[in-house]
Figure 1 (cartoon, rainbow, N blue to C red):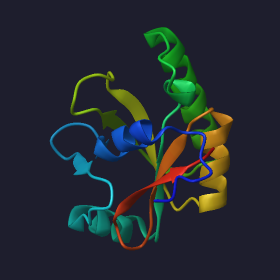
Figure 2: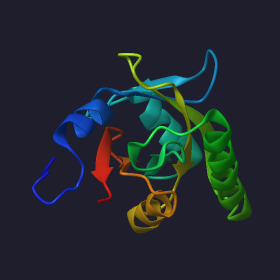
Figure 3: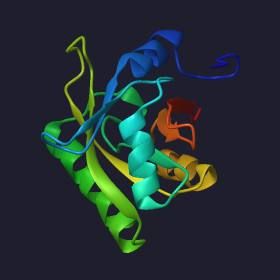
Figure 4: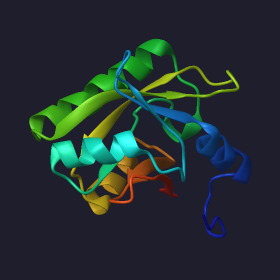
Length: 144
């Protein structure tokens, strides 16, 4: 990942890369790691008949910790947009293994192109989204 022109600190990007991106909730959830192929994710892309997906959150805009209520309100707004656009989604969660950041609700959106994914992340003042291409290896996409 090239950080030369990014406003985001390298330490923050490192935190994003260490995060566990859990697609789904419960026993069937997939735990995804940045730059690591996931066979179950590949199978899910095939099942959904798409070649890509994006994980986006509305929590903690620009990585500034917000109240639980504010985060829930932002998440509800994100869900409303995605449901209105009738895209295929799975509720997800971003987990910081160090425990510094509280778990963040997120959404895995299937079949969304990268331009729309970036725009959606920016709409919710996010520093990054997690892009999943046909190789089923999640990647960080910086937005600023």
